[in-house]
Image (cartoon, rainbow, N blue to C red; front, side, top):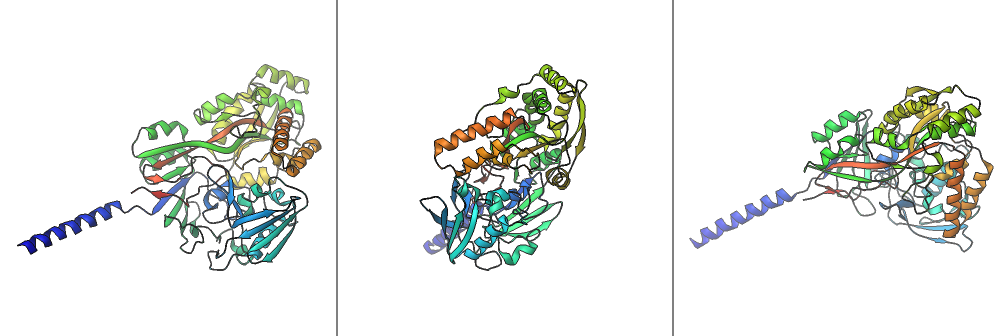
Length: 495
């Protein structure tokens, strides 16, 4: 009897333990929805932030990387030394790093990637990040020496961008459809118009991911996004496109809502070489015709921080210049008359797919119409926008959020799509790039912000908030978006 009782007790205990273990087994797959689908999968040859949203850190890695708080941390380089004159960076690479095809990642891959990015025929959308590089030398397989043509206080920061990830020459021909990186996840499949799937890289050199399978689902329609999330067909929606629905999710215990900062300066971008937009009085008139708060309330349901220049309000060097372009339609009309357009004029307004652009565009068109500026609205898909606006410069006005961190340097590129050409500003940015003292860099950033605001280069609207809706059990998501990324390397499900 004693023996039977013991067996029964043991069996019951075993069943209880098994049941407990089963109940506690955490989910290891996740489906993350995004509004925008990448045009292709090479982050080193396109301006589309949706590429980084899927691949940054997950599939591709750089010498350095952005952490969730925006700080720059070691990546494929475990450490580095900087020469006293600030011209030479010696990177010590992590040992045992392999690409997803099993080949070793070493100094030759670093040299190939940096030389490719800075080459004369480079297709890199941020080629300027690499202009300060004079030479890349492989000292040994795990040591690379990068020599600059002048001190660059942002060099380590620049190397953390998605445009600076390390790729292998052997896989470059197929990178746009079959990306091969070194990250914690491997590319699995892309069903265009629907989803991209990743699987865990079990040979990852660093801390392995907890998730085994990742699906990025693309849902462009805000109403469909709402329905899919509410039906729990997806686990996470990063950059949720329906801000008016956030209170509903906040009140539902099945979900969590994260609202953080992004680096996205949302602007009414202006073609500075297209008449009459090449006249600063006209650009100033446009700026004063815009009611930022009405756009934030109407298009974003209150989510967004007004900006008066191309700089993130949460940055310690930010200058609040919103008063420089305060809403004043009477002043707009006066400026248009002074510029020779008392009856206004007509220009194009080409809008990419995001909700902030499509919704904001209708509001801005009405505000401009009130002062005599008529806009011909075209709703473009991203591929069309990149071709017509970004590369072709065939536009008058457009609305876009620049999500790259600390990117005011784009105003020093005369051939950049809004075509602002100011030698004085270019000199300021050149001095900033060479400056290493924090106080000097702060002063130069403030001068740069003020100059583009007073030149009314673009209509500065708001800093894009970053709302994420997720199921309650998801943990490890980034609150803020210091770069455009959906980093899943530390994401897991609670048990």
